[in-house]
Amino acid sequence: MTTIKILGTGCKKCVAMKASVDTAVAGLGIEADVQKVESINDIVACGVMSTPALVIDDEVKVVGRVPSADEVAKLLQAQAAAGTKA
Image (cartoon, rainbow, N blue to C red; front, side, top):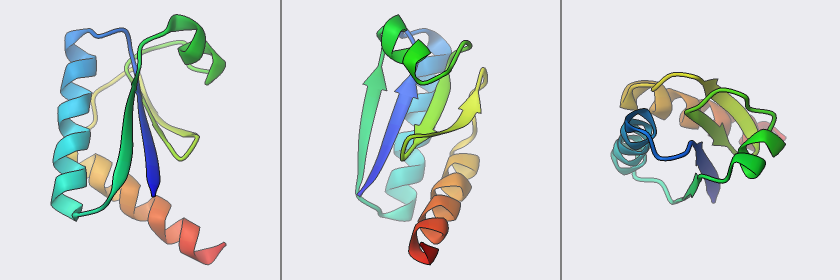
């Protein structure tokens, strides 16, 4: 199962990113563990200094902006393809 973390303190952009992620996951019909990370210490521990940020399977994919649901879907598909090659 894919783990998706949305890093941010709860601002409008963080809420928008959560909506994009939920739309992408539903559109792809995949199972994902979507987590909202709001602790500044946890965000910094991921190496992120600007929010919102998107982390897929412990890899930071997007920082400082809100990706569209289509972009999130493409990132999830690429991550799944990379995982099948390992």
